[in-house]
Length: 564
Ligand SMILES: *Cc1c(COP(=O)(O)O)cnc(C)c1O
Image (cartoon, rainbow, N blue to C red):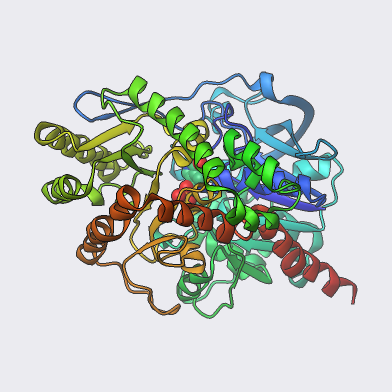
C-alpha cells in the first residue's frame, strides 16, 4: 500500500480543495492509481472554504471571496478520531472519505480529507483548515502538522499499513517525525519515504523557526527525534525548512521533469535527484467530442493511452469537426460572460493559468501596437485570458489589471485583436478553454516551470502548444511538427533565466511568420500539426505512464531492496 500525501487535491470539479497544478496532478494521479490497480490511499486536508472565488471589477481589480461548498454532498464522515498534541492543546482530528472510482468502475481509491472542525476542539482550532494557502505563520505550521502527523496517525487508526509514504511537495514532510517515532531507525525511514519536489522556487518552501517547531511538536516527539531527522548543517541553524527535512530523510528525491532534475540538484546541492515527468489523465481531460472521436477511431484508448499515437490517421474532416464543436462551446462561454464578441472562425489563443509574476501572463500584450499590426497584416487574433492571483500577491493582482488595461486600449484601436478575461478559472472552465482554442500560449520565466501540465491537456485535444522550452515541453517539443517553442533550447544544465525581449520577439515573430499564415492560408497543414500534437504527446505525457514509472522506479525499487 502506497500512502500519497498532498496539501491540495482536485478529485471533482465541484470540490474546491485545490489551487492549481499540484492539486490537479494529485487528482489525475489517483485516477490512474485506480485504473491501474495500484494499491494506494490518499491523505489531504479538507478546505472548508476552498481557495479563492474570483471576480474582476470593471476597473480590472480582482475581487476574491471564499468558496463555499457542501461537504456532506460529496464525502462521508468516517467517525474516526485521533488526538495530536499541538503546542499546549490536544487537537482532535477526523477524516471525511471520498472514493475515486476507476474509469471502468471495477476499482476504487480512498481519499481521506482531514479536518479539526469538530465540537471537541475550540473555535480557533476548528478554523485551522479554513482556506488553502491563505494563512501563513503558525496557522500554516498547524495545517502541516495536521496533514503530516495527523495523516500518519489517522492511517494507523484506520488500520492501513502503508509500506511507502509518498510526500508530494514538502507540506506533509512532518510525517517523517511520526515514522521516526515508531521505527526509531533512520535507514528504515529513508527507504519508506519518497519525496517529490514540485517547485523550483526555494522562496516558496515552507520554513519555520526551530523554536516554533519545538513548541508545537515537543509533546508529540522529543528532542531525540528532532536530532535524528533534522541533522543541522551549515545551511540552517535556527530555521526548520520542510523541503530540507524531506530531502535529508528519504532515499529517493524526485523532480517532475528532466529539466527540473537539474534545477533541483542546484537547489539541493549534494543530493542526487531522479525525475518522473508529470502527466495528465487522458480520459478526464479529453473533451466529450474528442472522447467520441477517439472511441470511433482508436478503440481501447481509454485503457491504453499509448494507442492515441494513431490519431495521426483520423480523417481530417472528423478530426476538425470535434475541434469546431469545442470551439463553439468556448466562444459561447466567452460571449455570454464578456462583451468581447468573439467570432468562431477567427484564430483564437488562450493563456490560462495561475497569475503570478514569473508566469508573465501579460507578456503577449507588452507591445499592443505590434500585436495589432500583426493581426491587421495576417488575420484576426482573439485571446482568452484566465487565472486567479493569490489574494496577497500584489504583483499578480497588478498583472490582472494590466491585462484589463491593455485590452481596453486594444479595443479602442481595432476590431482585429480581441481580448477576453474569463473570471474564476477552475477545472470546468479549463476543460472548455483548453479544448476550444486554436493555440495554447505558455510563457513563464525559464527555468521556473517545474513541469507544467496544461499543454499536455490541450495537445490531447488537438490544440498545439506554443511555449517556452522548459519543464515537460523540453521533452516533447518538435518545432513546427507538434507545436512551437518560445526562446532558445538551452543545455539541460543551463540554469540561466529567460530574456523577456528575446521571448517576446519569438512570440510575435512566430505568430506572424509561422502560425497565422498556416492557420489562415494553409489550414490543412495546421490540421497536421493539431493531429501530431495528439499523436506525439498524448501517448507519453499522461498519468498512466507517470504512475507506471513511479511504481517500477520508486515504489517497487524500495520494496525489492527491503526484501533482498
Ligand atoms: C491543469 C491546470 C492547472 C495547471 O496548469 P499549468 O499550466 O501546469 O500550471 C491549473 N489549474 C487548472 C484549473 C488546471 O486545469
